[in-house]
Image (cartoon, rainbow, N blue to C red; front, side):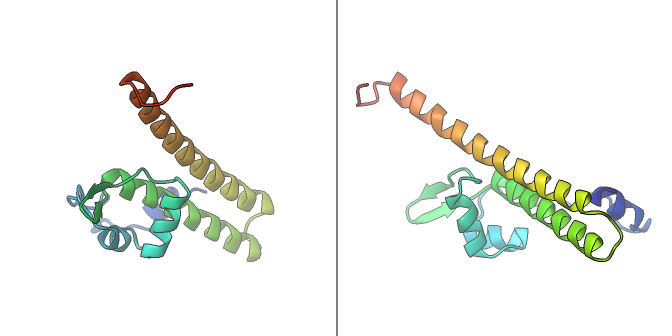
Length: 137
């Protein structure tokens, strides 16, 4: 049973299916953390692990956008799935395989985000090389 199925099944007709989208093109790290329900420390941790692209910096302030928010929400959703799967397992409702599958899904998503960040950085390096880069092989 997926989390989406559980959520849709327990919604009433009066609840909106899609939450309203707010403009989040320029969020500070505090605003991003508040919008995603994470702490600033957690957001910084994910950034240091390469799960988030670099923010746009103006002066001393870094600004995050919808890409950052969506990546953090994906990780948080998968973490919730893992937590629920282990609660179900510990409660005797499901087997260990379901809990381990949730762990695998989270790991694959985090790996995919890290690979996307790596690809982004490799593209920047290739751009620098194409523009003359200032180094030699």
